[in-house]
Image (cartoon, rainbow, N blue to C red; front, side, top):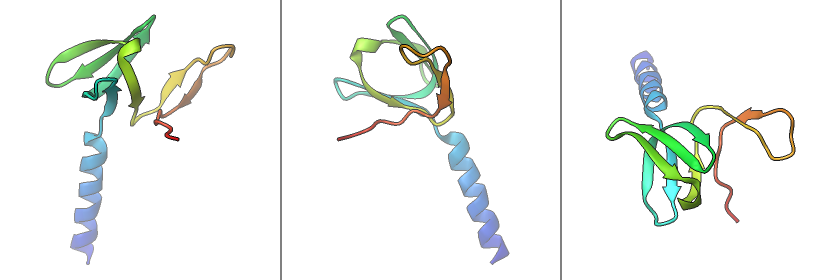
Length: 89
């Protein structure tokens, strides 16, 4: 029983550390990596397989993050911090 719990804990740690942010483009392509920045109309995603990839904001359908990010909403003076997840419906 203890061995099984240790294996489950190790597996959960592996998958949580292997999780990545994801950007879904309007054409259906998906880019996994770490969202490094957004400035003006470009999002930069840092990937293991292609280095830094710059994507025009207008080409992004949705995105989500696995770690907290700061977002400054239009009209707000202070940024909010949290993970980003798509809302459907």
